[in-house]
Length: 286
Ligand SMILES: O=P(O)(O)O[C@@H]1C[C@H](O)[C@@H](CO)O1
Ligand code: HPA
Image 1 (tube, rainbow, N blue to C red):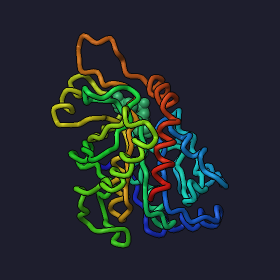
Image 2: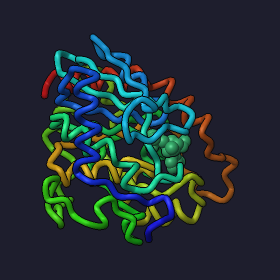
Image 3: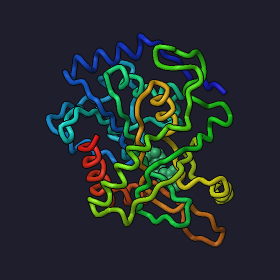
């Protein structure tokens, strides 16, 4: 399952990037936030910001997708030292899976303890509406079924064990706190919980694929997040994940609906403030 673009990294590679970032930012973040498509506004909430473009960071990949700015933002949110990725890397961009997840191990070496992942996703659960925020309670790593897993290859024990458990991938206490916070913020009417499934992309799903995922118990489908979560759990980070349901996955052959990236970005513009409010109020509690 390796591709021509697949490459592996040594512990020293990650360490070199982390040391460079510590030196350049002068900050030791405790929380890392990966911003999904159109959700980079989360980084604007940080105070005392230091912005570092990916192109300046040793060994960092570059963002190629519209809605992903391509920079790290260090700063404080609700008094917590944070680093935000304004732009994530996707497998469909042509990066190997180790490159897609490269930043997560760098964050671990920076001293990050909690990873917050956000994404734009298509809603499969018929009870979900466009604009709902789904707390991710579990995932299906569809590429993993054919061996595409960021932990494939030599296991670096300094990061974690060969066979990490994934039945506790998403921190249940943070899900509870987020649910409580949503009530306080007045956004519980569009809060959901569910299972996220990543596909390789960049095609949106066929109707048959959506029906299959529904029958498997998947609530939302996207093209990211899961590889980052696997690597984060492997190195012991606490993980909290949010999907913004930006569109409804098409499951009906008579439907005129067609998934498209513009609709995805349009929904993120409408819900960005609510999502940002939820994340920042949650941070105040952890
Ligand atoms: O980075 P995320 O997962 O939020 O981006 C989603 C998946 C594709 O990259 C894109 C499709 O519109 O949005
Ligand atoms: O419907 C979708 N499918 C896959 N990825 C997505 N990202 C936003 N919406 C979708």
